Image (cartoon, rainbow, N blue to C red; front, side, top):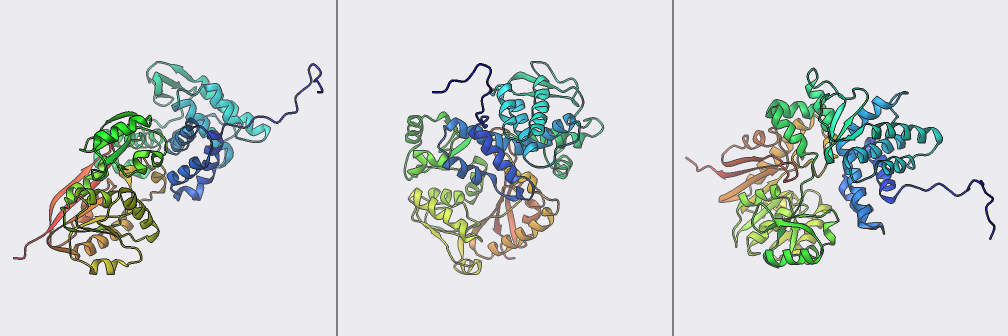
Length: 465
């Protein structure tokens, strides 16, 4: 074998970045721009499921992508303050900088050297590599252990008790431009920050912004027709799931699990369903009874449909309909997995046909909405929002509610629900329905690291005078 002479430079190719960083970079480059309307989680799930890499790599991949999407206004403010020749345009360099900065700021277990080096490997060309290296090293040198925020224009408290003290201001002045500061610091659209602050006040608005940046734990709803909570807890322990604890609602568990829940044996066997506790409230208010006929409009992906069937002991009839037939396949798979026989998935039927099959004892209208109560799980959702959505969507929601009302049997119950926090989509829609009495109207606000947000209203037909 030929030996290298002393001092000879190796001609081997430079190492590429790790799988997690490479895939995160690829996804973020594809998502930016017009692709922001793409739902990220299905894309991330497919990418992770196809890869033959360790679960830790997949977990890091998820963290980086969702973390960057959740915080890129703050990350970009740092880049802009550091880039002497102006902000890099959209593309590979900007995404590499976001990925590196997110790791430096928020993933305190990732060594700074690794965050910088791996990000430099994501770009090509000497100038691009030098730019990424310089900006990230400057940020890394600005992070220290301990300390308190004294200058909110240039300092940010970080996880692990660390403090970012940047050499110059990069955030808007919170005294002179309070709303702009909140929008950049928490990374939200300006109009949504203005909207929430006007409605809820600054303190509550800050809580909502923080909640949207903190993913709630995985909430599992036990299927009582197949297993007991004790059996589920034991099975989860056997699978190595950590942090198993009782949920806020009976028959639920919250767990610390960053993998794909579909891989859990308890889910494959139909013992549990993934459903946030806030989402469960609509069916609790619906209160379906065994033997009743129930209509679930906008049923996909099936969480509320199957929850109702379980509450009814799988006795009665639940008609599941959705305007997108393709999404009904997810409902059908959930019904089959859970072993439910009372659910009839209305494939190929029009809304007129479904309504004509009534009347129904219970009707649930869980309508399309802006999803501002679930931004922690769908961080890309905040960048899809437009101010005009609050004029366009309520008109659709009012029409669905009115048509659903026509299918309710005398003495029956109509429930309207959204995963939105917005008054235009909630109270503003429900209060327009004539001839119905509002028995309950409730907004559940999201809590950081605990639950999502939702709205639900229970209506009963007014007795004729």
